[in-house]
Image (cartoon, rainbow, N blue to C red):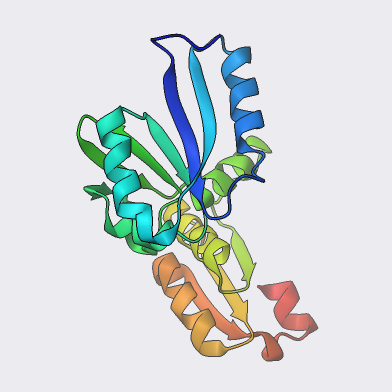
Length: 187
């Protein structure tokens, strides 16, 4: 039951009405007996700055951020976590008083899920295929977790090299066209 003390969170994007996030989050809030509600908030590109100011003014606790706002929302934050700063994009915002803190949890969530299944980054190699947003986040998180080598392969070697840098010294680029059976096995 929504009351005067119900806390608000949501997802912003354009389009966003199709999102399953409200159903997932609201079910989790109910299971945890939290007085929270999570809603989809369609926000056009031209209204993003206003929407984030409104988030602070209205006391919205947090927002998930989806396309096309991830990069621009990062620029509008008061502070970014190290992952969000390295990637230049956010996927969630948390209000702390009048400040917006931008987070990118894609890579850390991936590495955490691997850890939950018993995988440890110690003395491991990883292969990331692609150079898009998810590949960037996962590569950064694998490097931060201490994986020995993160090979990034993409159609364009330049794109693979850019993403591989996010893993620090562990990052190794390779063009997809150069990935033969031996390279796939050794990556």
